[in-house]
Length: 256
Ligand SMILES: C[S@@+](CC[C@H](N)C(=O)[O-])C[C@H]1O[C@@H](n2cnc3c(N)ncnc32)[C@H](O)[C@@H]1O
Image 1 (cartoon, rainbow, N blue to C red):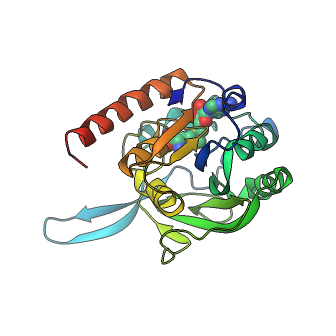
Image 2: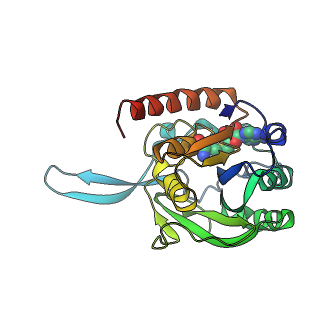
């Protein structure tokens, strides 16, 4: 079930302890003090991406700058998408309430917002389990160190539980999506499937309160799970509907 709705409203209508897992890539502050940070003149700007270069006989991996028109204009303007002003304290209590006890919650976050997210999550009753790292094949230039990593805060509600594949490393090396994305911060379904398959069982319910173009939900379908999701932006909601529709039909026909 998916809703084109503000999750703060929508989550309140869900009964207590009705989902088996939460996996989300939530909105967070990307502009310090409400001011767009422009790169300094002496700084590298743009996004570097590892690409396979071939001269016809040999192939090699090189870090190349993405063309300006490959970078979504919303990112160039210093803003990822229009709805990113919701605070952790507004939605975390509802996510905690609807999650079953003894279950996991994965939240994708950057380094700058990690401390605030963990503090707010622990205030509502979540317990810290682990900090996972997603190592990407692209780099974002930065004044300090170029960014190649994103973080995933793994939390639990209630009693501790192990993940299904205890051989999984906490450093997950998965290629980022190259080329045209369905959403400026679209996440690879292969990454989301790792979380889903490690922390839920077939036919269980996965919640993503900020699903964007639907990567978590598509990964849930591919893993044989049910899903509940919210997305406030109608454009991304529609994109998710048609993506899910295509994947569900393909699975019905016996495809991947
Ligand atoms: C970081 S993006 C998620 C991208 C997603 N992981 C994907 O692969 O497409 C966060 C999304 O949350 C949505 N959003 C922001 N505030 C919301 C709210 N209060 N309720 C529901 N969705 C919201 C934004 O429109 C945005 O699409």
